[in-house]
Length: 311
Image 1: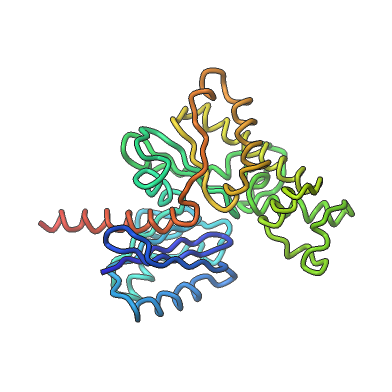
Image 2 (image 1 turned 90 degrees about the vertical axis):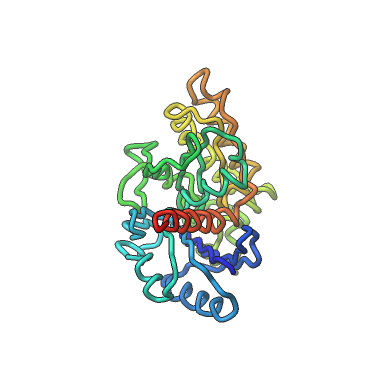
């Protein structure tokens, strides 16, 4: 018997087939695109032909209510106000658990990652957007933790959520890309302008990091600016919660040099004396796996609770 873990992000969707022992047997990753559910349904249909699936756990980059309805997904507009749990259960006639992606990744970190043994830690998902989860006293706290939408510059850039000055508008993968494109449009020099046959609008965040590591001054500057913004956000979290650890995951967490290093230095500089020194800021080892693993863990918790209620 197997479980299916699904992680729907603003840029990528990941689907994992997971054994009853928690081992990932297969993991695939593909672009989210404009119609993510069409792709998801097609993939699940194929998987169900090959595996006996007991249930589906879903992690979504957005606000999800207790009934598995996506209230708002700032970077996946097609899922806004969508009854995702209900749709999947009606379509496949199996148990489904749906929760925020950072919440799911937090659960995975607590039991299989950097959060093992911690009484308190905050997890940040660094991708198209920025999400957060808070582990405290043996459980994931049910707090919104919309970390990407904390204001770090109240007169600042417009964010995808409609507000201005959000952390996400400065430190996310989308923000780094938008920043680079804006500067290239103004004629600033960078190797990035030669990529994709000169169509730099196709550039990816991982391209920016690679070019920055090759010494490109403009890309290095952009990665540092994003890192400083992230560090400002981290210092706010440290000052508010004083966790044992802050765990960074998601695609951008792989940009350890320049971006992450700058963020950690900035956070330690900005945090209140006596608080910053106590916090360990680390990157996750479950970057591509945390969402699907946590989703299945949440599904199993849901199934266990139902079974206990029936006995």
